[in-house]
Image (cartoon, rainbow, N blue to C red; front, side):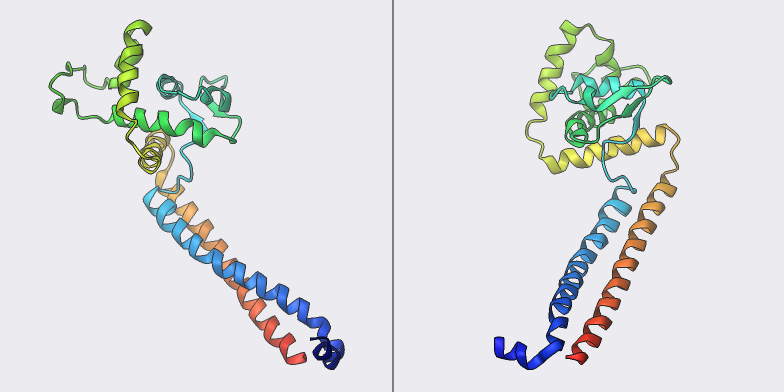
Length: 214
């Protein structure tokens, strides 16, 4: 190896540079499939919503979430504003904290009560979580305990999907342009892919040029 390097002379100085460029090229090649997956999974399927821990949650929705906040971390991640809404103050742990409560609230708010024979009919526009909030704590606690027991069999993937749907419904209720949100995510991710592809092209040209100098 030493003899080869001596034979290369000053050209051997380009070898570490070529190795670094090849590492950069490999990293870019590995990153592109993930961005493609993000466009499909997040951009198209989730409507551009990257996380269930959205920046702002209305007070009525936040009170519903607090019913099922088993980790007691949700209140630490959000704080109330002057407008009465709750804004995220700490993204660290927010996704984990909101995952389960958001999944349960979304499921209950969209439950088909007509299929539940033992469930009394509720006034139009009133959901199960609305009814739970109206109950006294001593009546509400055993019901919530039963609901939590029913969700123990749900996988994290299922909870994550339902939590994203909660975030989608919440953003729509706040008047967010969901089509714009989706397209902004797709275009921004696509722009990142173009930059990475441009870097790969430059690296490929550079490696070929430097290799010709050795």
